[in-house]
Image (cartoon, rainbow, N blue to C red):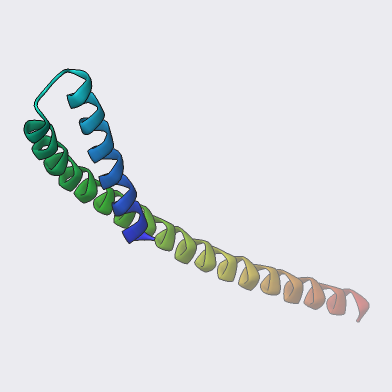
Length: 91
């Protein structure tokens, strides 16, 4: 997933700068060099962003699991409390 994001970001950066450079009438060598440098920069930013995003998703999933476990414990405690009250009322 991270590799795909990095590759996509690098490709987008390369294509964007190549098209803009050629549209502005820059020399092919200068445009190619700028496109390669931009591809590296966009790839690094894409890698950083995808890593950050995936870590955030994993953290959210762990937090959700933790809250589900707490909710299950609370539900079990409430059921036990209701059962105890019913037994008290019955006797």
